Each structure stands twice: as C-alpha cells, then as structure tokens.
Image (cartoon, rainbow, N blue to C red; front, side, top):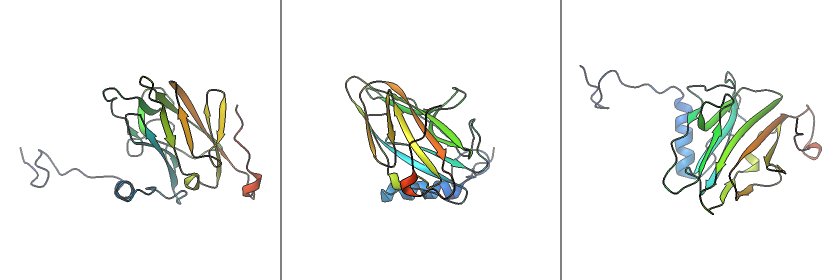
Length: 186
C-alpha cells in the first residue's frame, strides 16, 4: 500500500473542503477574534463562548445550501464529554447528533436547540458578541421561562441542566435598529 510522505498514512493525501472556513476558524482561535464575519455573502457564524462546559466554544449560523439535517462539510460533531465537566452542544433537528457547529439554511424563522448539561454545582456560563449577529435577523435566547434579546445582552448563566432555544427571525426590510423586537415564541 502506498503511503503519503507528508501525512504518513496509507492512501491518497486528504483534501480539505472548505479551506476558507478552516483557515478563518484557526485565525479566530489564535487571534481571539470572531472567526467569521457577522454577515458574509454566503452566510454567517456566531460564536458562543463557554465556561464549565466540555468545550470552550460552539458555533451556530446559516449558509447558502445548508439544510436542517447534518451537513458533512458545514456541521461538526461535538466530542464526547470530559471527566467532571458539563456537556454543551447543539442538538440536530432530527435528534440524531450532538453538534459543535450547527449551520442551517436561510429562512424566515430558524431555531437552534442547545443542550447545557451542568456538572455538579458548576454553573455553565455562555457568552457571545451582539455585534457578530447579522443585521438581517433578530435573535432571542430562551432559558426556561426567561427570554433574552441577544442584541441587548451578551451573557447567560445556566445553573441547571436544560435545553436552550436560540431563535432567529428575519427582519422586515427597512426596519431600523430601534424597530427591533424580540423574536416571538410560536
């Protein structure tokens, strides 16, 4: 069997679909900045920073051509939980996968479900940058009976295990920043 010299593994050299996304994510990780623009021509990504989860961050967003199911080159599976940590990941719409990145197709109303499983008494802290939210949508985050406008706040403490709901509702054309209202519950 032929071995690739660079990768020392059998078979042909791996190819990376989406080099733009990979490079952007790596730059964002090393520079401490949002890795993706808030609203690129083909989509957007929003970073959720996490404390006391098993990951440091998770991502949600939209991209042209993405679906509500697992998209191999867009969505990324979450790794299993660590030892004595909470578990934080997006839940795929079909309930089959735990996702580190959950990228959907564009629509008028988009819902992401985020599982926050608290370990012991370690409250999970979630942060985001409101400036990273695309202007085309209003975003709310629901935790229990509390609904937050994601443009007006940038943190949430989760003391108990639960599923959080992020809703993106497309804004009407011409609606200015003062016209923004929280996304309604269905």
